[in-house]
Each structure stands twice: as structure tokens, then as C-alpha cells.
Amino acid sequence: MSYLEKNLKLLEEIQKIAKIRFKSGAVNKLDNLQAQTEYMRAKSEYLTVQKDLLANKANYKRISGVSYSDNNLKKPEEVILPLNEFQELATVNNFTLKRTKLDNKIAKNTHYMEHKQFAPEAEFFYDYNKTDGNYSYLTNSTSSNSSTTYGVSVTVPLFKSGANIASVAKAKRNYLMSSFNYQDEVAAVRSEAVDIWENINLANQIVETQSKYLEYSEQSLKAANSNYKYGKTDLLNLLEAQKLHVEAKYELTKAENNVKLYYYKYLHLIGKLSPEYFQIDLDSILIRL
Image 1: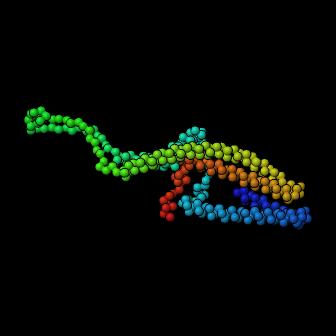
Image 2 (image 1 turned 90 degrees about the horizontal axis):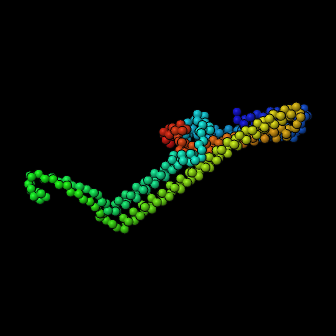
Image 3 (image 1 turned 120 degrees about the horizontal axis):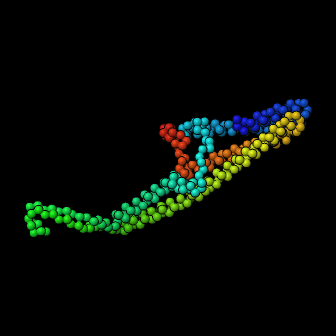
């Protein structure tokens, strides 16, 4: 049962008690109306959230191809590495860095090919020649003879126009820009790793603090509910205790969701967040598209 459902049930009990006590003259009309108003407000909020949740679950299934209930996003069971190991792993396995590194390699090969088409090419060679039964000028003899010739073969491109020079220069510039871009991406990934690592630790601390605060608010609410039931406090005190309890539950839920969020960012940075991780069938999505 979600905290919104618990909140709604609590307010439902409060408005029932307020109605009974109003009829018996224990509370005034304003307290009774306030209890009814708070209950209707909570019910409206609950129904709105339920409607949005159903729509989001339907969209999730339409996009991913799997039911949300079959693939509930819980906190991954992932051991958080020390910061330096996390950074090194990210620079090796990050999807964006892999793509940028491949682009850099393509730019380097393009520059090499453009340069090869423009620059002379020299190759070392040897030529083995054998004569049999003919006169040989090498040995002044007609018997079988052989000879090996060594040398260097130089190939010079036929056209050396300005267009060739410009192509080589352009390819070189692209390669340099790609190299600088790759280094920038590495620095960005390492910086993002620091941010994610620090936020994961902070989010876990907040969850621990909010859990303790929720325990306190639950005890306060239980006491306020008992006091109101036996006429030891008024409705405003009970509603205030109920409000603090709902807020504590909400803040804890937000903190837990932040932990999940940063855990998934952690997985994404090291290249582990893939359709296979979520067991999403990409073929079923493509068929529908």
C-alpha cells in the first residue's frame, strides 16, 4: 500500500470520527468541515496520481515492449567502486567515449589515406633473373646463369594540384579536432564520475536520515490519533501530525528515488545500462514501429 493510500485511509477515519463527534457536540462545525475537506482533497490527489500512473505504465509497455510490473526499477545490486577505479572503468567502457574514440580513429585513417594519395611512395624491391641456354652478358657465358637485382621503387602521384594539398590539410585538421574532442570527452566523463560518485554517497546518507525521521513522525502520528480519539487533543493537532507524517514519507521516497537515479547513472557511465540489462526486446518494439 502506497503512502497516498495510507494517507487517504487515515483521513477517511478522521472525517468519520469528526462527523460522529460533531453530532454529539464534542467538536464544532468548522472542525467537522475541515475534516471533510481534507479527506476530499486527499481523495482527489490520490485519484489523479492513479490516473497518471496507469498512463505511464501503458507508455512504458508501449515503448519498452515489457510490462512495468515485470520490470520494476529497483535499486541495482551494484557494488560502488572507489572513485579512481570508477573513473578508469568509465574511460574504457563508456558508450559515448567508445564512439568518440572510433570517430578519432576514422579521422586518423582518412588523413593517412589522403596523405598517401598525395605524397611519393618508396618501396624496396629485389628481382631474381635466371638465363638458361642463352648468352648472358653478366657472365659472358651461354650456360645457365642467375642474377638478383636490388633497388628502390619510387611512385610519384601524377597530379599535385592545390585540390590535393587542400584535401590533405582538411583531413589533418579534422583529425586534430577529433583528437581534441576525444580528450575533452575523457575529461567530461571523469568529471561526471566524480559528481555521480559523490551524489550516490550523499543520497544514501539522506535516506538513512529520512528513515529515522519517518520513524519519529509515525510515533507522533500514532500518539496524536489516540489523543484525538479520546478527546485529549483537537482536530488541528491531529491533521498537523498527519501532514508531517505524509511529508516525511514523501521525502524518504524522493531520497530513495534519487539513490536509484544515481545508481542508474553510475551504470550508464560505465557502459552497463543497455536493453539487455532491462531485458527489453528491441525487435518487438521495431515491429510495432
